[in-house]
Image (tube, rainbow, N blue to C red; front, side, top):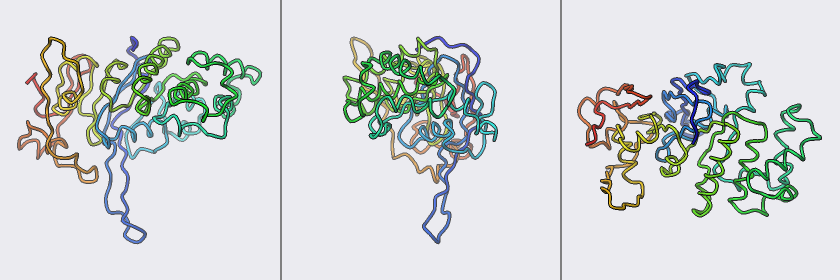
Length: 331
């Protein structure tokens, strides 16, 4: 976690990504999955912005859209002021190399037919001219040592490594082109608990050394709290709360945020035990979300207004925002 500058590196404004649901060869469209529905946030240079939420809330779709693997239905995404979805930007390799990703599954992220040297130099082949070919071996050696692996590992294949080692290689690959933003998609969820802390510490060291910004997607609230400067909470495609990490964790303003945090395992040493909030029902279908506030069917504070009127985003001090008609006041 680092101190970030105020200027946004990435700006997301009212981003929408919907998917049509088909009913078979002849039935045509039967519905629309509202995976990301009007999401807005900024990521500043050198900071870590964490995104949390239950499975199916739209976190991974959001990441795929920012990586330009999906085309949004509407909204705007700018990287240092440049719209990344203009025809010119979509063909701009220089822009592509500035945003990289570390995937959730390190085993599936690397080709089993490629040596680690080939894995790490493949981005350099695609972005020809980034680094003189004579310096590739030196670059591979530097990156392997930086992520805590021996240089001779470059001649091995992925099946010869553990999950933790493969994720270190994934981090090295993300750094090859010198990006300014790395999207971390559940970066430690596939690893043993004993290895997770090592990888998280490595990510923090890399950020401190290279000044890279992170967008960290995770369902593990303790990981997000440890690594993030600010966090956003997603529910059914919407960003329902956002703010400074410690502020959100200590004083959640949205009922959903409070429920998520109350379910987080904690060690209580002489302090007041957090009261657990049990949500009723299941997450509604993103094809047919509830009217008004999407969280109202599971919310203990819901009133008639929540059924009839979608809540607007309330902006508070220090970038604190919450999308709720009746935000919490430490109740």
